[in-house]
Amino acid sequence: MKILQINTVCGTGSTGRIAVDIQNILKKNGHEGYIAYGRGKANCENNIKIGDKKDFYFHAVKTRLFDKHGFGSKKSTLDFIKKVKKIKPDIIHLHNIHGYYINIEILFQYLKESSIPVVWTLHDCWAFTGHCSHFDYANCYKWRRYCEKCPEKGSYPKSILVDNSYKNFEVKKLLFTDVNNLVIVTPSKWLADLVKCSFLNSFEVKVINNGIDLEVFKPTESDFRLKNSLENCFLILGVASVWSRRKGLEYFLKLSEKISEDEKIILIGLSKKQINLLPKNIIGIEKTNNVKELAEIYSSVDVFANPTLEETFPTTNLEALACGTPIVVFDSGGASESVDNSTGFIVKKGDIEDLYLKIKTVKMLSKNYFSCKCIKKAIENYDKNKKFQEYLALYGI
Image 1 (cartoon, helix red, strand yellow):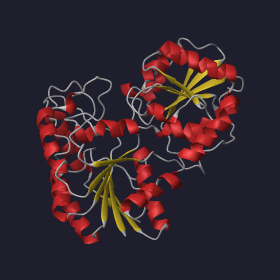
Image 2 (cartoon, helix red, strand yellow):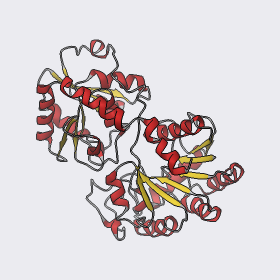
Image 3 (cartoon, rainbow, N blue to C red):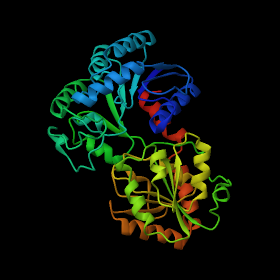
Image 4 (cartoon, one colour):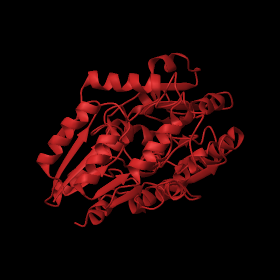
């Protein structure tokens, strides 16, 4: 069987790694996998690049000026469809189709004409809104009826001039709801419940949690504490691919004003500019795709804090658990679904006082109190080899 996946990136970031993991499992089971992507470099075989830098920038300009995200990249999408016709996939598996690289009108016209079965994994909410990928921060639920006057126009995919959310919503609804043989997958129950309240509610929705590589993310010894002169410190870790407002950077800055001298915060994924602005009790590290290094740091710290304001189902939570590190997380989106009282604490969104109180509770009980339960939860629930087998079952393999 031939499976074609389409995603913004290939092999990098959480969605890119998921796509490659699925492809590897397909190959292991004797099937043929392809990944089409629009940005960065591919980290897999049988990859297909959609468009080029020039195309990307034109699409980005169209978005910035006219709020027409998903409606650029016409020629590159037509060229891509020609390649798809040559491959003749048995199933097309969509992931993120936003990201300035593909034209959704051309893509979905082809999907309807070809009648190829489609699996669509939603990693955020962009598919059923008129503009944004997340709306919790703005507390906006217009998408349940009709998007207009978007309060998140300035957030990804950012538009600095036109608000086209009304028209975008209208076109997306027409495009996405008229596809036969389409099954929607979400990584969290939270997102599945939202889909059922959206214009996509006529489709079957299946929850498949994200999985992680337990051969990499496991308790791992390192000299991280020694190298950074942190041997006697209680370490609080935060990880993000990009520290945008929704990831909760401001709460770490507030937390830095409360912690004691023997407590330090480690933040991974910051830009150089952000690192230069940090207080002395926060150690900033730039983004890394070195998963072994990540596992070493997860294993070295005492607690993983995730004060995210909008999240679908963060793999960072799963990675921390697998390394034996307890989690303190805001009750936001699907972020809390991987945490229970045996593996950490769930805090009301935005409550910095309780966030610190729960971190202090972990300190009092010690990391060892939670570690075995954290590892057990990760092994039983988030092994990628087991989770992504669920996709093969969905494909009918």
